[in-house]
Length: 191
Length: 391
Ligand SMILES: [Zn+2]
Image 1: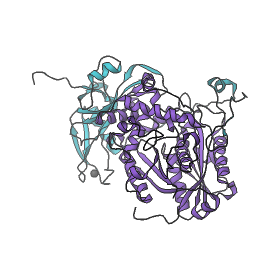
Image 2: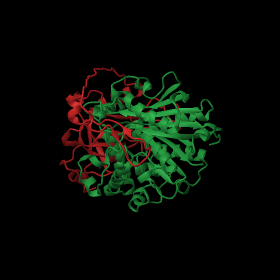
Image 3: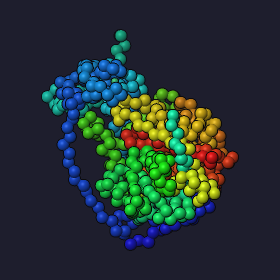
Image 4: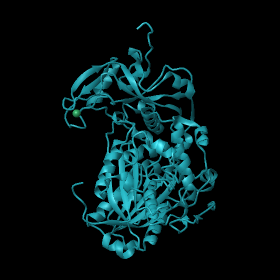
């Protein structure tokens, strides 16, 4: 057992009593101090549910489906079986456009365990045209050039219109990834 | 608040362990350090404690299912009514709210509240434990990680109000500097805005030095009913109001520029505390700051700054330790560290010492009489708020 570098720290501050704790270095953690490890293996078979199942079937057919609440009038996607505010069924199904507006985006350069990504991911909250304002959902932005913050920010801004880029019909699996990403809508100068 | 609780509840003792990147101690041992210190400073023994509330965040950090029960021994909960309070990052302040309900209701006179987190066990990075907060069907296939929701929210906040990243980096500078005087601090430093913005971009607009660290640590307080507090303590600090509120788990449906759930929680706590003008009546704030922008976001939700204007207030020194409304004088999560549930309790410990005028080198001037602590978490949907004061 390694002897901790510093087991107590006294300071001219409350709680006046010495604070206890034994910080370990990386070196101590990975070897010198007894450590055991365990890699969990858990598998789940998730049901998509009533509303999302129908939404996924829509994606497979190249359509973005939403639902409207007959009480509060909100139109949302991804759909849900009931309105969480009114506690009524949300069963007025509508087919939405596959265009959207960027509510916010980020440029992510690391994986979840902080390994660097050479090509950044660009997650975004997008508001699908036809839904109630601020009813956004998570997806990815693509179709932009470069990988630096500066280069990407030149091509994207909050409020920008985007359009879904779909997988080819035979490749679609009825999954959120049937939409590959959303890309900026090209402006036509003649319009 | 139409109903007011009948019994007054006070904090009469507080304790901490060191906050560390990686501790040799187990979660039980860390809990014992903080809990025993809180008991000692309150002048009570474990056998006097009638109930225990324990806050600790995801089981997945420790790889121990039902870890609240597992930590029981370290929290002093053996053979007592024991509750785990768990609302993710909001747990620390929620545990005080839970403890308060037990005393205010008249059920118990002395309750120990312990917050603990040991994040370092989770390999290769505790962010792995957060991957499962995303919806399994419509979000996880996109490959999200926890940084996304923060970076997306920060960008929405910035774009809604025209806030620059320099303005946000200043939170890291202030809190890491404040933490230089905190005995438990893990990541105290004297940095400039330039240093913060020169650190790697992890998920633009978030830079590495705008993120709180992975931490191990524990914190605890002792709560007492009025008649007991007056007997045991010369300077009890009263829990004047508590509030909490959760927003929808469809997080993309929320207004990401403004934490409405924090406002709801704050209004509940202020109502109970009889506060009508929070900016005049609150002298010190410990808003939750796991990411630099969150302190500003939360100060607005707490109605302590105008929407989109907290960065301006910060830049003109309003939130400095010697400013008009010192915020995170402890050093916060950005400076002291972020052992999740323990960090929220640490904020209440700080109010306890500051309001007693005992914060040493961290003491804010002007004999503060009332402070607010706030935490936030779950799928960034909860606000937990506690107002403490000397009267
Ligand atoms: Zn509705």
